[in-house]
Image (tube, rainbow, N blue to C red; front, side):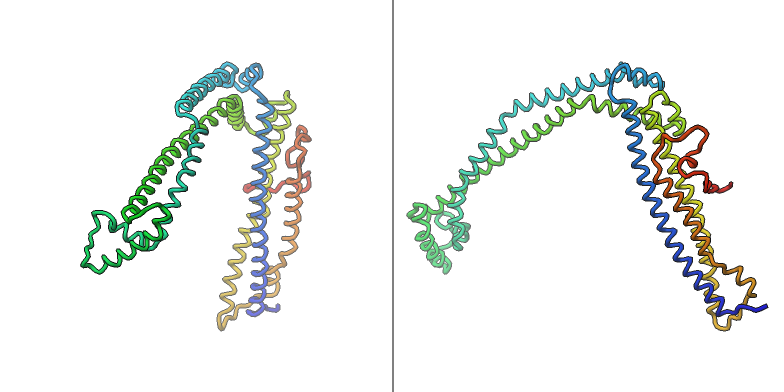
Length: 384
């Protein structure tokens, strides 16, 4: 019997560990694809439920509501109850609309305010131009802030800055006086103050008009919302009835749901669609568990063992050996088995995802047989 030595064992363990890592990556990709599949199925299932409730409750016809109430044993869905709720809601909304319209009329005309804002903007422009004439002069701010040209000016003739200010004042008067009709610096100051006060008064009016217009705009938006809510009251209650119906029907097993409505063809088709989608989701979860998640767990254990062996075999002086017959059993070629598993998985996944003829199911056939066929059979669940 030929023994396989440490070098050969290390090489075999390293090669298998590399293959297992590649397979684990592929299995993880399969899990990620499954999550995408489930998200798509959930969206389709939501659409199927909408189709069912739309077919079951296409409108709020009284006779239809009464039949539905009796079928589902739900008094709250009876016509008298639903229509009374609609009228109560509509009356409440009408009162809200009337209150908003009265408040809107009391607040005045938004168009007039908008026109006044345009006028204020035009009136402010010449004042701003004059103020800008002053403030473009670099010496103006210092003289104005110190009160030059008024009784509050603090400097006297014996102070050096007094003469500098006097020179600047003469220059400003020569520059600005002819433009604003001022003969003295005091008149310049008075004109500047008058322009600032005029602009400030207009700014205060602008703020007041803006506040009032904003309040009117908010009222207009609120009124539009209230009118839309009043006009959509029936649609809103129709959606509420459909939600209530869906909540009740959700409690039924999917296959029983389809059996409940065999007398209503459109509803029955939608119920079969729901039952088929639910079966498709469960079948996908079953094949993913059997052919991806469970093999992944097994391969992780195998990889951990190979990595432990590699650590041991890498030690100096390791003399570990294995008879050839045991070596062949310990390190078989796993790739054919993996390939077969993937072939079966992809065939079943493709058949499940591609199936859409939900009305084709006949009595005595499982959903797996309808969607996939008899070969391969569904994988066993844990415990089978």
